[in-house]
Length: 167
Image 1 (tube, rainbow, N blue to C red):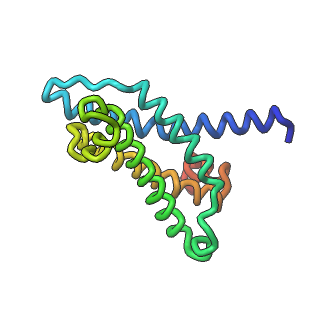
Image 2: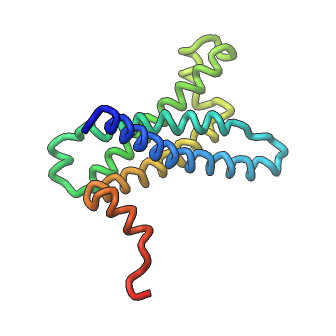
Image 3: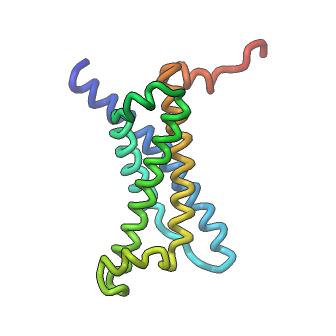
């Protein structure tokens, strides 16, 4: 495979994965907007959601190539999906907590005090909501990754787009 073909393939994979996570993140933003509309609180951040989708997509694509070890390899695919989802979810939560600590470092008197009191931050419900939605997105992605690996990418797409037999 030539360099141009490899680059084109990589860009396609990153774009599709980014679009997948962008759909989840924009859905989260729409739900937040609808819920907070009642309190006349404006929600912004679609551009941040899209940048976040790109970052999460690239991280997930890189981590797909990291082996979870022989023990996981000897168990059903569900174990790998659960473990990857758990590990990725913990990573997302830690990143969001670090972000809140960084944002509130001035009011807390520095980064370390902010990090110690991050769970008392006024935006913690948003952190939990973001984490829950991203974990579900990661879970669905990991399940699809297993199906893609077992069936092949083209076969998986054809399975969803094909008309039912006999109709």
